[in-house]
Image (cartoon, rainbow, N blue to C red; front, side, top):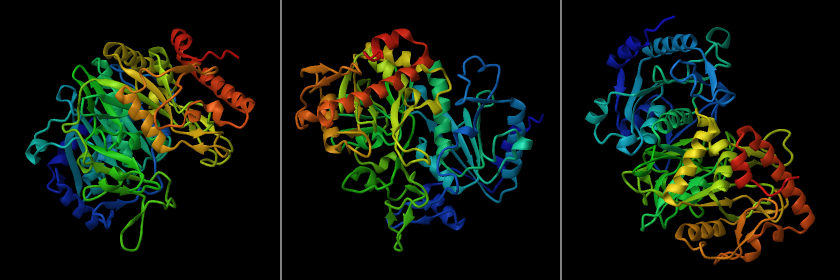
Length: 527
């Protein structure tokens, strides 16, 4: 077994052809020179990620090591791989990179709060990946500061190096391997840049809770009176859209920590889905895609204008842009303690209320459940809405057991008197294909009322099946919309569908073996 990777990294970093701490203009020039991408009419760079247009969770591993062996929640998400296999692959990848004409290096940080910051180094085969890292992680104020960083964790990314599973011990040509002992994330065989971002998020989801700091897959914003709000939600629930509110300042759109000082952004950029993006619906995101931004898998018109309606390459078209491209932001990206938490779910069954207030126990129950829906037609053979339960609204990125994060959340709710609401951005008046999608205008109105305290003194009614407390009135929102059963043509059809979903929740929750949370926070329904 070879352990020469430290010397090989040093050799790579000392090569004259290794380009360090390039500015975005320098990186754009490299991208165009290398034929890795092209400029768009808005000044953003447009790239393609090849056959991998999303993450590869089945190719993600954590190295089995003595110091972390008993802490990692091993299973289908956190797959173990042996240290010997990892080290051999590190040597191969570094030898491969040492033979490249150019390699790109960025040093920066994860965590806007200096008290909880992780020093990073990102080594890239591709210039556009280095620009992605420069965009998504926190940038040093000067080049000199960046060059002086002594990294605590390193990403080594070689997308064009493909593993041989029979020889290298992987499942495919692609691999994303994290070693907490060697403090390396090793990526190969995939050009999807999001693997770097989520790799470091997984690292922070390990380090922060061990330090007693909550890590969260959520967006966050703050109002003029310092009322911080958190938005938890899976893809397609509106997390990025709803947190980009012109009436409030954005802290960050995806990954946060919560320490003794308050809520802080882990990142220095935003990574937004762009399918069917328009300025009318999402002006802040639309206008942020300019110079310094990267478009992934978005088709262009002849004049270089992005066609956001084109999904011929993938529906997962994306834009990465520095958080400074959003006008209404907090810099540095941290604020005080959260006052309101919003759990977003896109319920394609059309049975969850558009907004409901949760107790602490209900909050922990729904946090552990992490429910949303996969729609019919998104995969072959899916002909009706399929439930998706992603623990803590981010199970692919959680190295520790889910209850670690849930218990921390419960403690923070108690300590800071946090209000928690469940908001359904999915369907009303029937399931997907029958009902209609929730009106964004109404959803924004409900969330603004919740954050401002406007739902504290209204009258609530408890739902019969889910046990959720639903406001009877919300100014600016039709009252009949608030009670889902009222929006269905048939009460019996609603009850049948709602009961079906309640059973799915209960079946999923068995894995947590948390009878107290289930009893106090779960559903009245006991069928």
